[in-house]
Image (cartoon, rainbow, N blue to C red; front, side, top):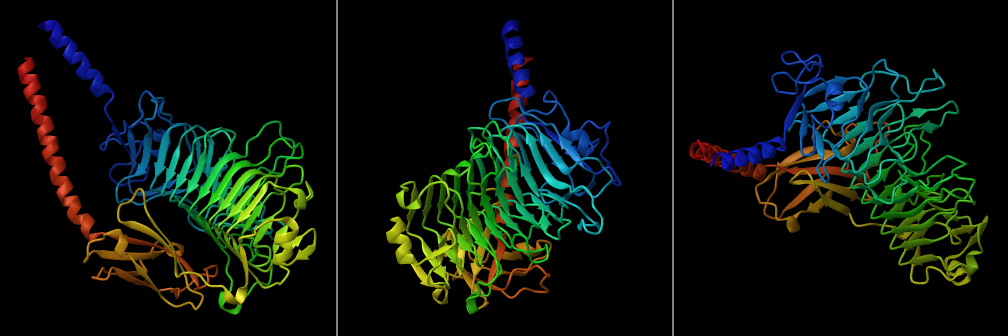
Length: 544
């Protein structure tokens, strides 16, 4: 009997040793419970942030959570957290309903506000930024640009609902040695600087991948960065292996890239490499369901000036391979669509608004090429001969017949351009009753959004937030019987770099039903805890 008891106890203690743990972090200047290097991660004796982020995998394991409590964390941080338990993630998250800000505007030699080397960690629900005043113009004073987040090493990390903004450099670097990464529902904006030439530097995302595991970047909102929105790219010219491959960009909204840098608009997405060895070729890239926008007066058919929205390929010795561009909205001005060097390309179900489409093709004869598959696209262009190849302009009919391409697509004059007022509604995968809504109205009128298919209870309270002003609520109301909400398109006190009133991205949250459900859930959880405690008591009473 004693052996049986010891065996049971042993099994119980092993089980408890692998139970989920929760740790707590507070700012070092917190009034009552400051985070300390000497803390133990308890609520009464919390860690400071840097101490928490460098815990060994013997202390913080897969399925453990590190809670970051409300406040501003001044510093530049390095995370080496690493879960070694297969498919079990460590989570670093803001405590529920707490606003957590990592402020990198401090004296430091670190080149980023948050640098990450470690695997199987989820980072979610906090902000990475620079607070206060600082120089962003190299022409005034040259300084080292400081990025927001650098994911340098470590596989299978997830980044969810982060706000990365106002960093004087790149927003998010997702580098080559970080296979299996997921970046979802993040807001990345206003990152970058003005360089010595007066141009913008600092992308929203800079993405590479040498792994066979897919890198997924989806459902993000990326805007007003000083340089390009997403660069799937390498500037290295002498590569000896591939590291721009196996990447998916899906259902992102990217707009006005480059706008803060003296109104010099640049690509919302570029997929390419600059390798002169013809080895590091961008390949196996999917660009699907994205909305790419630049400020343009669509009511007046404006296309003057250069405003590229999507570029595929860059250098003739490194033409992209196996790139799929499907079901994207590509809006810009001249050069909105640039397909420069592509060996194998699928371009289907896209809508393009531009002055002209720019195609360069010095790798092979387009007329003899069977590796470009274009289908079901709609092009809006001001030019009758809007397809430019090697500085020669072709009409749409010549484009189709001469090159045997796009036979079931259509081209229209931009005067006929219009879109559905509701471009997209995406329900959050991580925050219940929250929706990202993308709207368009070229007359700049308010838009009615119908939520009837989402089965939201009538009488639910809702709030509307413009993603370009996340700190304040634009409008509140109650969902009526028709399940329709009117969203104002006219910006209130717009910033200098605000989108025109013909386009907007909004977060609409419903919360009345959730509060009721929360109360019920709390009661259920209490009952479960009481039952668990009662069960343990009965077990130990029986045992002893």
